[in-house]
Length: 156
Image (tube, rainbow, N blue to C red; front, side):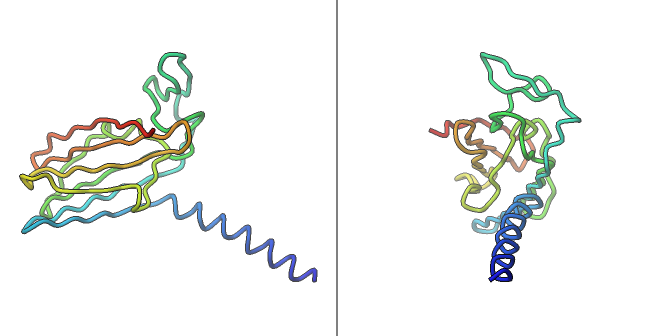
C-alpha cells in the first residue's frame, strides 16, 4: 500500500512538471496559400522580475517597465522572448515592441491562429494570452514588406 501511495504521488508531481515544461520553449506555426508559405516561431521564457520594474497604475492596471502589461494580473509568469517570421523562406524582422508587453501567452495551437490576407502579402496572427480577468487577444498583422502592426481584442 505504501508503494502504491508513493507511486501515485510521484506520478502526480511529474505530470504537473511536464505540463509546465511544455509551456516554455519554441512554438512553430506554418501556413500555406497557393504558392506562398509562411512560418512563425514564437519563443517564450520565464519572467524574471529582477530585470524589470513592476508597478500598478489605477487607470492602466499592471505595468512592466512603464508599459501596460497585457495578461498580467500581478507579476507575470512568462513572457515572449522572440518572434521569427518567414515569408516564402525569407526572414522578415519582427520588432520587439510588437510583443514585449504581451505576458503569459498561451502558445498552444488552439490559442494561436494564422491566416493569409486576401492579397497573400500579409498574414494575420491572433494569439490569446493569460486567463481570467487578465485575458487578452492580440492581433499581429505581419507584412511581407516588414511594415507590421498590431491591435488588441477584448477577451470577454
